[in-house]
Image (cartoon, rainbow over all chains, first blue to last red; front, side, top):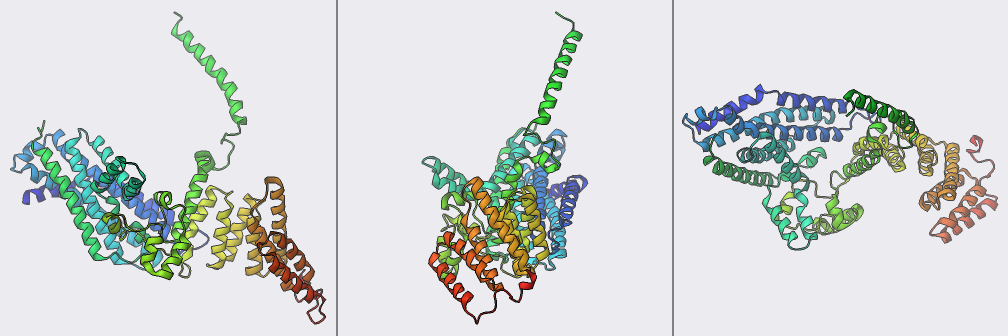
Length: 258
Length: 295
């Protein structure tokens, strides 16, 4: 465990040394503030459109950070040949995967905290209320969703040759799931056999990342989600993250490093 | 084989000749955007209308607090029937609403579980002032497609009825009128601003009369238009004249309304009633009504 934590701490340090997070945060802040400066019918209490835009930017930024950070971890270690001294520490390949995952996931968590703090400030400044439970649930579920994304990108990084192709494929998959995942069952019932069964199998097999997207509930001030549902969603994400990490380890443990 | 410089010179001459021919053609081309004064027109062209429709729908989504059918739901259940779903929810409880709403019964455990994580109950922006949240999308929709009349009338309705922003409603309707000078829908809504919010009956009457004229003009030009707005306009005109004590004018509007109304008998009864009032000596003098001085 200590080995994995040591690797993770290096990955977290890498995040705040790189410019990705700062650029994305500044972009999010600038666009949100510019949109907030718009005047609609002399009403300064309008807030939901601003919350929606801010959350959308946060989701885009978080996905870019998660996929970008995790897709390059193992390929860059190979390219720089630092993987050899690392594995000679001694540290097993499983610990390396676990450490990389933990580092990327924690780094995403830190970035999310900053993003959601900004979102909270913007929201409070207009709405004069802070639904802490809803915001915490949104942050929590978002973080766990990123855990699945990070694990998926790590698996991609041992499957695909280049980080760029891995990142592109991962982002396309994630976007596809986010946009269509919820509706695949509706599509399936309208198809003829055997396509209906195929689509249904895909529907049950893919990790439903859209479950963790509770932006609409936050934007429209719905009541907080039942905590048991949150726990269920957490286990669901944990199961998929473990599955992808295990698959990554299975591929990586027998893979030649050069 | 000619020298490369000669080929280059020939290509240059061909390009120059084409440019002198294409440039004037492009300037006079009806589909060109170079003359447009708006940056949005140049960049987005006709796609603006698509986005305008999207943002108009977005306002409706906001009005329902995010509870709105996706394209996949609409493919199965048809167009959204929000009112029906709401009535079902209030009358028969949430279980019945689950069956009759656009979501239907959950199809599987993922479907059932996911309904806890997005707006899955019918809801409206009913609290005072909450309706303001739909306004940004209507404003953006109007900026993108200034010829979508519905955007102006819907925004004006919410501004004046629910947010008490009469000035903003009037300004927005006037902007819509400038972009759509033939719109009887905008004129009808503008008349309501004058009548119901400003108490300026003279202007309201003038604007509604213009709306009726525009309706007939458009009907003559483009075929028969939607009766509903004409019916509404004539009803409001008749009510206004009756309120002001101008029985004859009120009767004249009701006679016109009778031709379009689905209940001509009711209208006829009202006409008879007004005729009796007009001849009765006890009723206030229709030529010296309290507001007659304004007219």
